Image 1 (cartoon, one colour):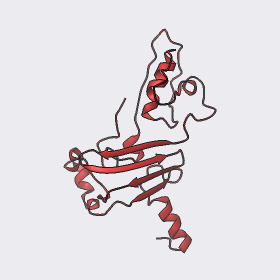
Image 2 (cartoon, one colour; image 1 turned 45 degrees about the vertical axis):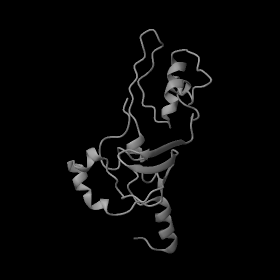
Image 3 (cartoon, one colour; image 1 turned 90 degrees about the vertical axis):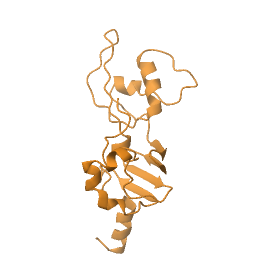
Image 4 (cartoon, helix red, strand yellow; image 1 turned 30 degrees about the vertical axis):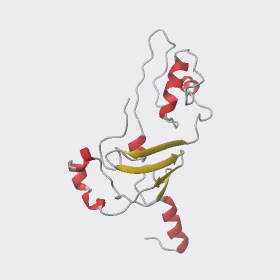
Amino acid sequence: MTDHGPALPRAKSTLYDAGTGIAMIVRPAAQHPPFEAQVYDELFSGVDLLPTLLELLGLDIPADVDGTSHARNLRTPPTEPVRTEVYTTKTYHDSFDPIRAIRTKEYSYIENYASRPLLDLPCDIAESAPGRAVAPLLHDRRPARELYDLVEDPTEVAQPAWARRHRQGRGDRQ
């Protein structure tokens, strides 16, 4: 299991999908019912891991454990999502950078509470080749709010959806 996105700009230490998505491979023990190999592409929060594993192992989930089990959806094709949104936060990595986000399958909304560079690179990325390649973007300021339409822009690199729609409403297509 990974703990954050890759050490690249707009990934590690961000609340974009590339910075919050995790990869995980699980192989059940031989004594448990076999699972077909699958990619589980539902919204999953880190707090969901423990209750999911406990249920898959046939153990009780203590009342004080946060999160929601995804075991049923892993055993059989999902008929409805376990979660319709995931909340993420960041307050500090290399420096104070308070950010909050909510993500659904269709949208990603991010609020930036401190005036920071458009790309706020962690120390281990800033001096790397990718960090130097994006250095010109370090001077622009990050917007206070970002809304991305994940159907049209799954990598969250186009201009935020609200700004694009606002300009189109004025007839300005630049």
